[in-house]
Length: 290
Image (cartoon, rainbow, N blue to C red; front, side):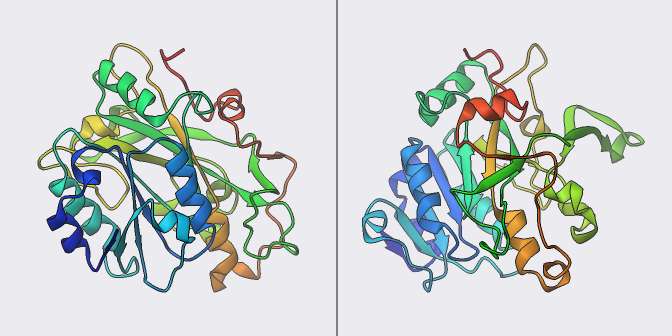
């Protein structure tokens, strides 16, 4: 169903805001828009909401399976304003997920277990959020794929990831409990082209709506417990978002486009589009879920 504005969508109170789980796809351009929508529909989300400019087209069969809102992602604070409006409009306890086009969510054992299975387990674990690592994908040949996007030739870095304690400004910058800033991938290797406040690769992409919850500009939430990687008593499930977004930006932004001839290096490896590879590389963890 199409909606002329975000307000019209929220007023209609569709199933996505009441039953879920809801996947929200923010489209920056047309790159792999169909495959992004199809991936998250196949993952088992109850509803998929596309927020995009009217000029961006999707396949007819997909258009019948999603909700679509006319949206300008390039307006000031567009993402946080939209997210916080949707959180406020959602039924408390609703599971929500957000990503951009050319991004693909993976969870442990996603080949045989749906996103609903994962979220049921998280509720049993008394967790209201799931940490995701945004793993950069890129084509191995930029002459053949100038925008660095190719599903068939996708590669990722197999090493070079690390974490630092997240400083707490309110407590003399001592690290926050069970919170880390994660780095790696293209944002680490090509950090001279990435603003410091955009170099982290962690994102709380899956979470439960509740009154007063807000997404902040740094992709963390106003509730500090949502930003933790695990509960106090044991490790929890984490997920991964395989994303062409950084590679695409580095190849389209004028400040970096002409200085990058290849993303390929000795630690590049083909992406197999399988959760086991991400777990084997330590980029996703099953926690207590076997």
